[in-house]
Image (cartoon, rainbow, N blue to C red; front, side, top):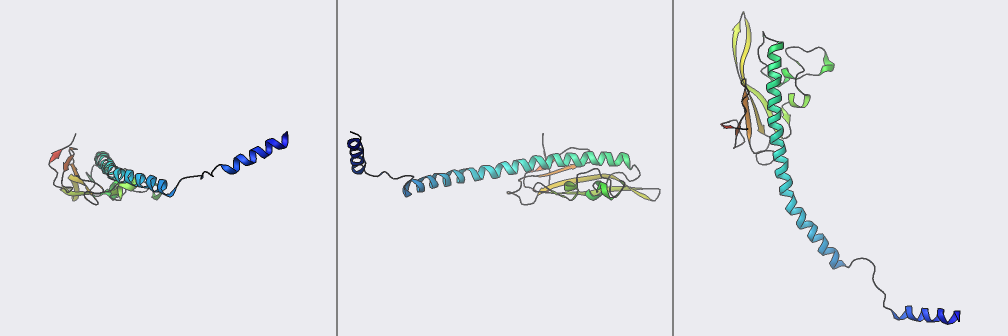
Length: 178
């Protein structure tokens, strides 16, 4: 009886067509096309999110520079404000803080480049007090490294701390930001 069942199973397997394992080439091509379409939809969204994040980082960096300027002015009253980012920055390992290396600003920001923006301190106004120049005003600017790619707007502030934007990505800042 056992041999009959075995013989019966063998015959049944030989008659059944072999089913292919896996996907056909057409199914794989369809899946790849769908993935490519989804990627093309997602890439512009990622780019706009990156620009928005860079814009927010630029505004926060301008605020950080303004705070460092206030701290610098109170620490070095005879100098007034700093007229360069390097004066606000500096490496703590290089020694004690000074008027030329105050160590009040992060290293990446004191280089002038951060998150797709270039930062600078310009338009320094000064008065001469007892033979020493004292900086009484400044303007800090942040412009995208590549307008439209790393950011869309430029940002400006001064010793009063009001941050304004230039929608063209330059330093002609006329729009107040919230």
